[in-house]
Amino acid sequence: MNTPRLTATLLALLLFFSIGTASAARLLSLVDARPEAPPFTLKDTYGKTVSLNDYRGKVVVINFWATWCPSCRKEMPALNRGAAWLKKHGIELIAINVGEKEKRVTDYLQKEPVDFPILLDLDTEVSTRWDAMRLPITYVVDQEGRIVYRALGSREWDQPELLVPIRALALPR
Image: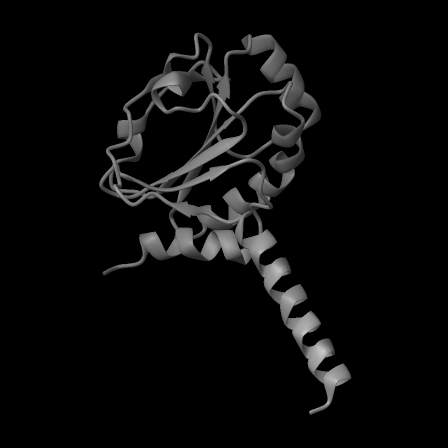
């Protein structure tokens, strides 16, 4: 038996699986129970009232974030690119700002504009019901209004590993 070759093969496999595990941790977590998504009605940054019921019958990705959160700011450009791709497939993405004044949010969006709705949870009532106290956190809700996936922490939202499972929810069954 060739010990150096076996050692090199084992090291390569170990490296492959440790890298795979690290990136798997940055994917979506399946929510086994698929609970009903807590309802909400909030104003967006344009003053329009938006409700979760507005998205009934569609898959919707809901991201909770804040301007003071470095990870939230880091993921925002990729979230915007991912939202554009998802929209082509009939999937909506909205972001809910947690507990900040509207001016702070709109000032941030002047510097870092996005093409998806930003809702304002001024009193953190909605984020509390969604258990969104650690930011960023993102939920994927199916057509029936049930939470299917959750992602705690920032992600590269324009990566196929994240987008394809979400798109699969919108495919006819």
